[in-house]
Length: 157
Image (cartoon, rainbow, N blue to C red; front, side, top):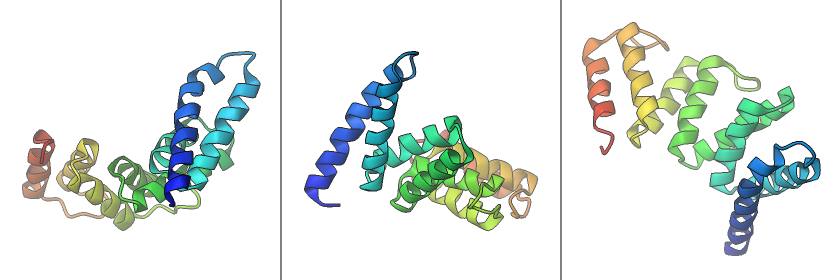
């Protein structure tokens, strides 16, 4: 992303994020449309923070299935850019299977591992549980579960 697009996307995100809580109040429908438009534009420019925040909002609060799919797509884009929070969400998306992302244990494990390697606590805890219980196509291994538990207890690593 060019420096000017990065600046524009950052400004759009900043404004939209500040407007978000106000836009949810009755009678401020126009502000809601403005907020959504700013977020969409910043996300289309590839602004990572927007992709994560707006993606999470659309995925969890989207009024339509298209909103939820777009939220998942934005999160996947941020995950591919290396954002640990988005990588954790990508693991969850693949674990549950959310159209167009078909349920896939190997993909879920890959994304959880990428997030965990960056220190994401919930990803480390999910991998520990998966090894402990033999989930996500992983062999049950108390040793590996304990390794991920230890990583989760040391968030600075």
